[in-house]
Length: 562
Ligand code: SPV
Ligand code: MG
Image 1 (cartoon, rainbow, N blue to C red):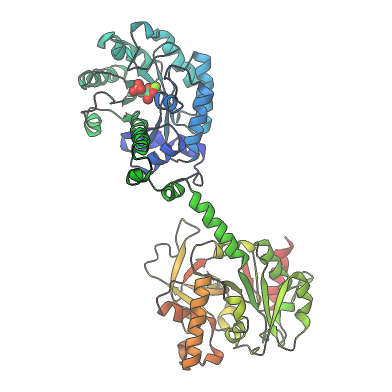
Image 2: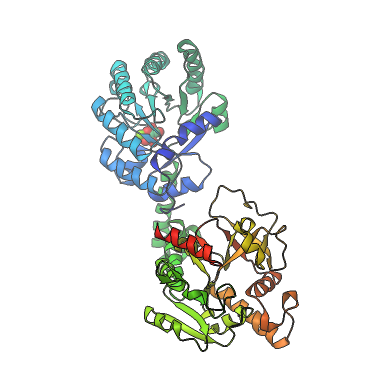
């Protein structure tokens, strides 16, 4: 999880309450920076605690209302940027009611799920030093603040939690329970009971009194514990006592301080850093944790794309249109091939190779659009693959093949390239509904039975693995039709050409007992599959049309006009 994986604020906002309602129990741990947020994100903790103590300490400052809301919001944003888990913010005292109203609004719109405010006066002191009876807020004023926060929030997905400090301040269990009752009456969504004893006795006592209080008031806010000092008790035991949220409030910061100090001394002692190598993570791991790898990968992909040739075999004569090339069929005033070139450019690709018949100069006009022409003698309708091999040099660095008789949307091209797989073919189901397509021999495919995403899937980006491809597959057993658009990475292209060379030399028959002369692209793809290479299908329902008849031309004209 890195900066790349965002969650929208309102999705995150409601996720704490949703999980609490589903499971009744949440474990949170502190984060004080983007990096520590990434650790929480990849851990099994359910939520992030944005602590005033560790946020302040990570800035080298004391936890005494010194880091203001702006500083805290900066850290909160830093963590939210790189995580998806719900966040509970430590709101300290919340300031006065006006300060608190502003804080609630600002946290809620960022997607924070809850704020906890403590019943002490500003400027607050940390609960583990400096909190005494004089630190306590008047409980009625504090109740008003809770109410102000409730009125300020936009949705009740945002939880306002009251933190009881009277046990810490040493003013006793009775005062604690009286305050709890007031805060519950004011509408607190949760009660956090704090204690600085080394054993959990007083929070166990409180949990029992809380139960009685809930029965009396006929409401059950969430109950929260922060077992920093009384940490002999396990989270599961706290759950059994009725706690709904357990917060490990400062442990990542404390662990990092220890590790950083040891590392600094060891380097001084050893007079070099070699001795700490096995105690610290490699730089490469940091690169990958913060998403630097992805930037490099993307750059590489972009460079690879710059080398990618788009090959359009247009040498074949068409039986459907008086043996003339379909590339020049006029659609809305432009030849079909012009529409293809435009979509390819829109997809960000500019290396286009068109395979044309040897003696045909009609295509020459496209050379000024940066299109390379590759002349071939193999222009019979069953020589598509052989004609493709005339552009062999253009295949070597990886290529996209697009048959000369289809019009398509650039998104379809992009989806073939962007799938991280070596071979991806576009497939479609519409042949089942088009009579004219069924008259011709279709390139059909079968996908793996276990493809969990076969046909019905929520994920529109999922790929299916192809097990069979070719013209002899029956329509009944087929899972789709190859639409004549396919992506081959550099390594896939090289494997394909190796197969071609081997089969050519050994004069072996291709699949379906064809000669090399009349082999289909699909025969070579089947051979790739048979040799253990993975070939994937990107299923589409729209975004392309194959031109077989004047009706297809009309449909394309109408749709392109829109
Ligand atoms: C914090 O983490 O800042 C807290 C919890 O408020 S504690 O420090 O344990 O009081
Ligand atoms: Mg705090």
